[in-house]
Image 1 (cartoon, rainbow, N blue to C red):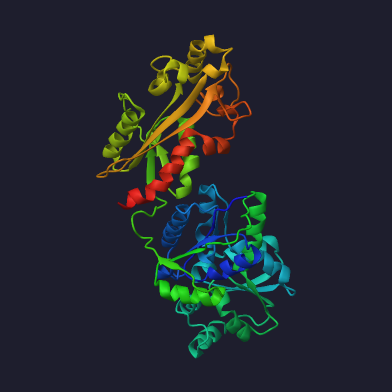
Image 2 (tube, one colour):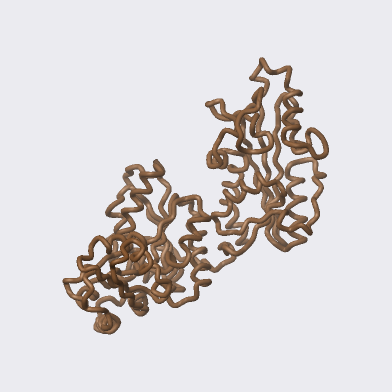
Amino acid sequence: MDNRPIGLLDSGVGGLTVAKELFRQLPNEEIIYIGDSKRAPYGSRQSDEIKQFTWEMINFLLSKDVKMIVMACNTATAIVLDEVKEKLSIPVLGVILPGASCAIQKTKNKKIGVIATEATINSQVYQKTIHLKSPSITTQALACPEFVTLVEANDRDSAHAKTVVSDSLASLDKSIDTLILGCTHYPLLAPLIQEVVGDSVRLVDSGSETIRDVSILLNYFLINGHEREHLIHQFYTTADSGQFKEIAENWLEIDKIEVAEVDLSKPNSVDEKQSIIIATRNEGKLKEFQKMFAHLGYIITSLKDYPELPDIAETGMTFEENARLKAETITKLTGQIVIGDDSGLCVDVLGGLPGIWSHRFAGADPTDEQNIAKLLHELASTELAPERRKAHFHTTLVVAKQDKESLVVEADWNGSIATQIQGENGFGYDPIFLVGERGETAAQLSAEEKNERSHRGQAMKKLLKELPDWLKE
């Protein structure tokens, strides 16, 4: 079970149609909703802008520690879903596949209409998805850009709204029997749309169909919320909170919704094209950082990607001094954000050694096997006294950026030293570092388990909590 909230994002208030269905189907789940009404509609924007704005909302939700993200925006789903799913370690769902699948099931004459924003229509994602699943079905796609403007202005029942809907749908093929509302704003206009197309046409709300898939994934990953007496839903908008609040309370039929205004364009938001350099040439360490950090949308690089950069001598006498040397030197040379990491294995009976000398314990440039062999030799007299083989991994992370005081976080991972190598995963001293109650070494854990429990994983959790405020300062 997992009581963390589910994150929902949309270009404005349209995603509230998804939230309403989530409340109905999943009453034990809390949500955090972000609607970018200030920059709506997305449908007429260029792909690069849509990607940037979507990543800003995603990073906002990640800063709230959500367990899943629902991209309750067809335009964002069409343009950036695959990229987001590749980079994030938590489940991410879009609204297009569920809507297309439902329409295929509902149609009787195999003629489906799709109305959506210009960007979604131009992407042809609905048409391609439907034809891939059922090639015999014919589709007609129609962009209705003014619908989003009506909904964001809370103009859903006026004579003007009726005229806009009627005019926009005038060219729709009269033979279709199923119509996909391919924008989550559109269900708020469903009564007007149904009046224009007639009762014989079944409307498919792509957003509400998505919640069935949300339920499946919650069960699959065992992250359902517990039954609780009180749920606290959070709503955020980039525009006027009063207008959002009025629409939300009317549509969700919930009194006294609290809505906060946020500015996603501030520099604490992460641009997915921005790079972070990890100040290492260690492939194992780099992979761990990429796994743990890339979900924020950064491009993660290492010193191997910059062969012209010098090796930074670790002349410090503490983990922090060495991490600072690497991070602050490289950021001066490149102008980019740099993470310097100094980690080491500290064995109690050896007075904390190898400590900051962990990487060169057996000499100037030893292999992992040589370092392990020396450590086991040093501990040979304690083989029959496991209580004397206690140890911990320590890491200090330093994030450096030009003209800023560096951010420093630390963490430990407690364990003990095995008497022989066990496991093939990991690197460094992982094959002899025993953790937990199962008698496993760090090298016997999966990458996901290790990243969750390790010193570096714990430090990264601290870092991700402090990083947004640090970037904003």
